[in-house]
Length: 295
Image 1 (spheres, rainbow, N blue to C red):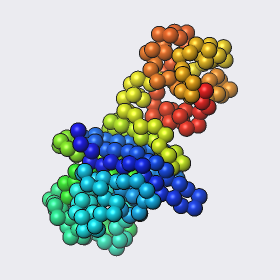
Image 2: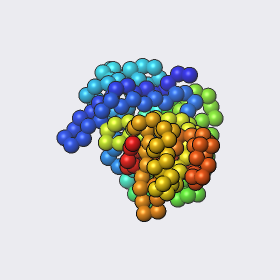
Image 3: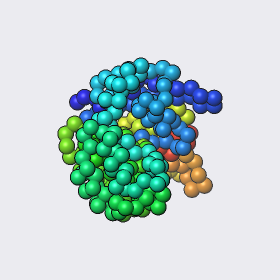
Image 4: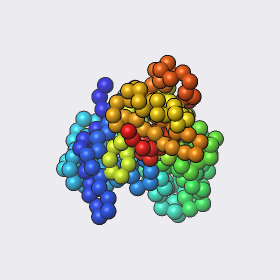
């Protein structure tokens, strides 16, 4: 399986922030969820992919071609194959939805005006409404319609569903699922709404303070991993058992006990049948990996 996007050893240094040794890929046919707190480095990474900033080290490859240092003309040609949605609607406020479509037709060789109108109808975007009069959620829908209407191979979404209500988010996810029905496509989806990623992602990559913390298949989190809720004596028994190798036990104490991140909940339950364990969610997994203690 080829990679639509591959980032290797990416670095970018600012005063007070360092993006260091970032490695990430989007294989064809996959959706990669990109998670982390605000300021962790998600948008910086995406800007480097799009050539909006120049990395200090490392490589970025799009569709098998390295883009760092590539001629601007070639980079522009490769970006024709990408659809992008940022966290805010970036079109001039005075333009109408219809005029935005005409503007985008000048930007993309494969622009399909019929497809844009179809997405606009699906997203209930009146063609005579000005960008300035759109809600945040409607602005996101307009950006998504533009990202899809030129038939891209790779979608890059930076908090694209953040401004949508639950029903609209589900509608957007259905649209992304339809996009992925065609072979060879992929999505890099940065989102704080991890419940959306649980529904659509194949892989989860977490970044914190400019460093990749984990990169795993989504099913390894939601279908295999678990969170054990332990009393003090149970926790001590788990620590002493040797079930976890040194440095792999992630846990968080509270007034009600200790939560332990378990990589394989079935194996754990067989070893410690007296300890309550539940399915892991992406939020819980990330919280224990980032904020929990390690032993």
